[in-house]
Image (tube, rainbow, N blue to C red; front, side):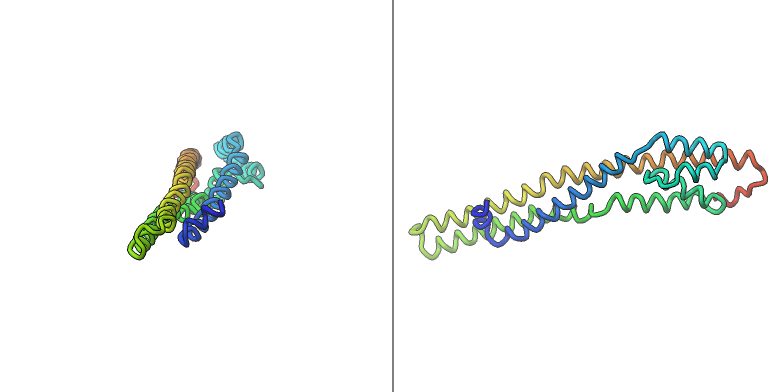
Length: 211
């Protein structure tokens, strides 16, 4: 592998850096989503909504205390600000959750674009090197010519080897983010409907505060 790396020329060094960054992001994001999956507690979310239907806000606070479920965090944010702007509070909390879920995705997207381009750059420099050798000595030194061609092929293969698995992971993580956003929207809408019923049931509450 070391000989192959050296044969790829100087472009292999930025490709190696891209590979390390991509692998680190994929591992970090995989651990992040595995953690979210382990903390997913649909029963807790349903319990919180049931307590909201009863208007038992203290019980909601106690039931959700210490929870790392992202849906519960969004709902609790709305509950805490229910007398001011429930919807905006949940929107803000949801945006923060989505920001956490989208962390490093821009970097991974950049690597997916840059790695093949670096491979093409290595291809061009390798071919240029081969033509320079041909122009200087003809076919007297075929090994030097094939070295330039090898450099061209190795960098192309390295760039594609980085980009292809990265794009699969990138699309998977994006699908996880989209699915999480739909879940947040589903439960936030349910909570808004529940709270609207509570407001309608208690005419003394100022509905204008919920807009």
